Length: 145
Image 1 (cartoon, rainbow, N blue to C red):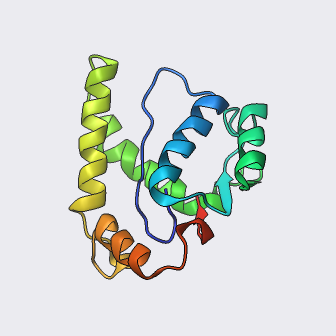
Image 2 (image 1 turned 45 degrees about the horizontal axis):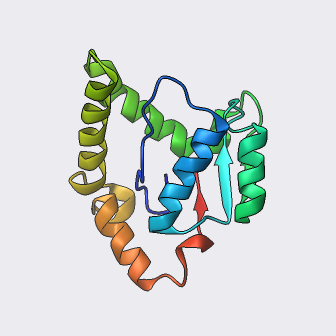
Image 3 (image 1 turned 45 degrees about the vertical axis):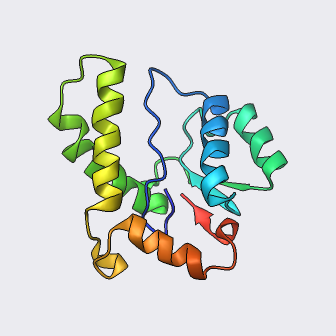
């Protein structure tokens, strides 16, 4: 999630997600958006893993872990997770991993491309992000959350 642009670049859907899995997903996102200067996360095991730490060092990304029990330190992603849970996860009974991936991909597309956000001057995140990238010096200069 790019904080300033409010764009959900990807939502990983799987049975379990390791630090290595997260690193690969971030490499994939970086091909399109560049590497962030910093990555703010909670203290989940996938974010405190040696694999993600090694990835961050090799990629020149600073890992910023919020304090345990302090979700307000990452309020934007907590808000996004709440919307995602209420509007997508709690509304569906997934029958398979493929079904979950399809439904979640459709929700993410709607969130990014169709839904205007007041914080973005009532533009959808994808539209705002495209304009931002066109005028920004480098996408890697942003903090990703």
